[in-house]
Length: 290
Length: 272
Image 1 (cartoon, chains in turn cyan, yellow):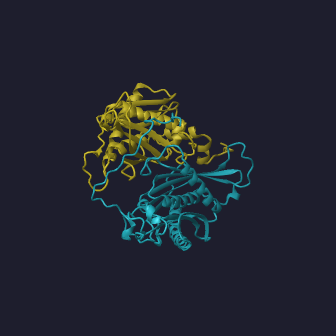
Image 2 (tube, helix red, strand yellow):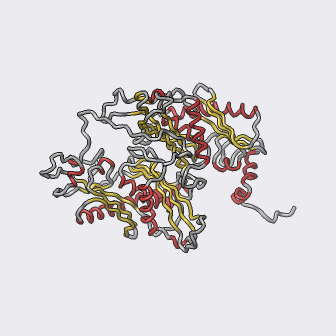
Image 3 (spheres, rainbow over the protein chains, first blue to last red):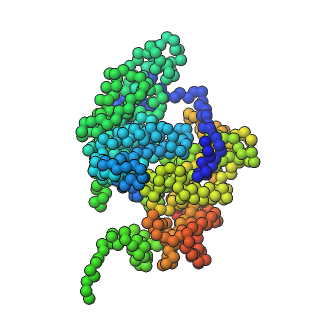
């Protein structure tokens, strides 16, 4: 890859340092049936802080914080499509771009947009498009830019991105059918599977290995440590007042009953998040009045 | 006297003739946002906001918000400097923070600010790069200092430099996990000095100098002066951009004002 000449250049390659742990160090495992670093019950979410209007130059903006997960979002538009060759469109388009700050993860991320960011951007625009009344602004484009300042768990990051983007859209005054709330859940086995051919069963591979019939526990809004032990996860984007789902992202292995159960949990959680979103938007109206 | 046939509301006037609208204020000694000509916007500094970074800080100057995170990695040293680490500062002006910026590679402004900050850090020897040596000729630390602009409302240089200095100031390189904090391979970054800056916008026609320009003031100004000073009051850099002329007296006044401002900013940075 050609050197990036538009940035202050460092060495060609560098690696993250390996962290040494003392011998008596005991990392968290789900087998103690407790959640990582908190007194949460499996179905509990982390407390959400949501605020609108931190970017004065944007049409709409919002900031969300779920303990360590921190995202900001700026919405610009509707503005006319400038690029030629796109042709006439009687519906507006929604352009989502999500960027992880280089310092947002445990390992440093690149400055260029990588494949994961492109995929996430796609997921977000797919999940948000059904909620936005795009027929109201033909020939125009709405840009949603999200920056992840700190990520503590991939699933919760995607879910928070849905929530923060739809609040920013509403703050920008873009007409929507409903807000989109996002929620994530992980399927984490909470006991060591009694699997005869794997004695070192504390690794993730063995708990997902063949023959293990441990019913996993559904951990709502899992953080990074909990995700390390997950068999699979689900991210649900949901419109609470219309009672409709706009996006489901299920990965990993799980039985149908677990999946439908976690969807139910997510819907329930989305209704709670919806209350927080409403509260943040009402606050922004009060601010405008002052 | 006949009434004028055509009148503007103030907001229309501002949109049609931003410079004239602005001049009407400055001749009265105030600015549209209520500030005096020489006053800076309210500033806040928060330390250690990002737990995944080795050091981090958030700086807000008015509507401008910058979050800076330091990430330490290991690399081979340069052949010509086998015992020196790397300090790589970059400022990112993403399309999120203002409609001025487009997605894609860094804009010219972002490159200019990154380069200016790199020069200040390098030339005024903020960090002894030999401190970052792990084993000579084999491995050194690389400090990636990335400042992300979250919200842009002018004066990015002051905000980015302050955020970078604050983040470096609480930067710790830790190679052992768990609770044992005092092992020999972990260390706190030692800064030789802490340069901070103050920026002024110059208006040629009215010969006014405005401290800490916001985004509208930046766009209609003729030029800008940034003055960077360290804690002893020594100059670390003076940058003037734009075609505006600037007399010696004006420059002296700016340095005096910058001394006061950086002292105040230092006070804000040091209170935890």
